[in-house]
Length: 116
Image 1 (tube, rainbow, N blue to C red):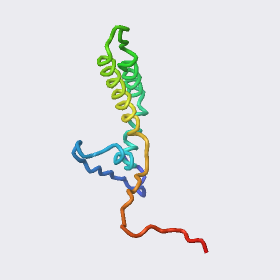
Image 2 (image 1 turned 180 degrees about the horizontal axis):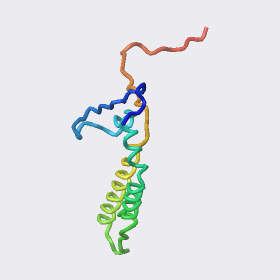
Image 3 (image 1 turned 30 degrees about the vertical axis):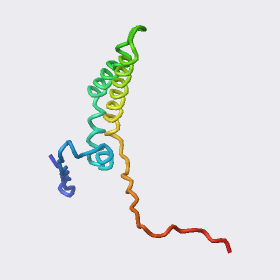
Image 4 (image 1 turned 135 degrees about the vertical axis):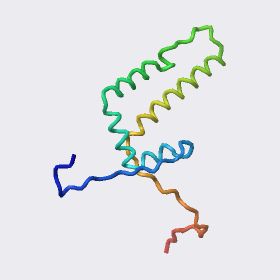
């Protein structure tokens, strides 16, 4: 309920895209999306959920025996790295980062310094 008649309600409209096309760097460049993620991440229940997920990390929760072969160890390491990356990306959703404009080739001759 808006009790101040001079303050108009802001309406935020998020354009939803297919989850197969939206990338992390695009999310992080949209202040409204980052703000939404930050609001969720400040929730104590969500923070506890993240803590539980970190406690379940396969690199910590499951230790291979000394007799494990190299292939088994490689699979275990890849799972642990993927898990770490997924948690880091989830946290990164709440951090704004201005999108860097890619450089475009102009196909012009390179500038060279001339000493006179």
